[in-house]
Image 1: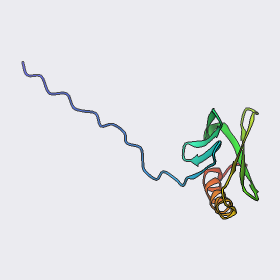
Image 2 (image 1 turned 180 degrees about the horizontal axis):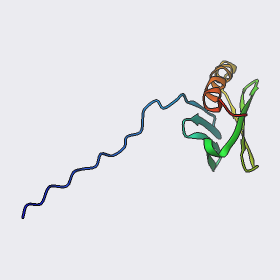
Image 3 (image 1 turned 90 degrees about the vertical axis):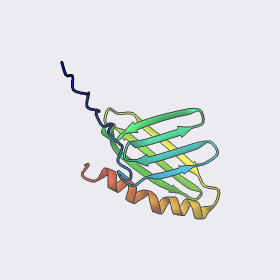
Length: 109
């Protein structure tokens, strides 16, 4: 009896450039804002906060860096501060971060 060959199932590929991203890091801390959510690293500690878990994300410019605060829908608030080596880098971060946050937070109250 003839058996048909199994049909291979294509693996889903992640879509490149699913949205803008922001990355900042210093010697001890780092943060990433991208299509997956917000990722904070502080020393040996790290947390991934997916967009579905976030109520809002705010940032505060610093003279020498940026502070990002993520407020979750279930209450906890997480903050990460990243210091730039040069003030020009801090200014660049503070210019690049708002449109990335606006992209992912649009439509949220």
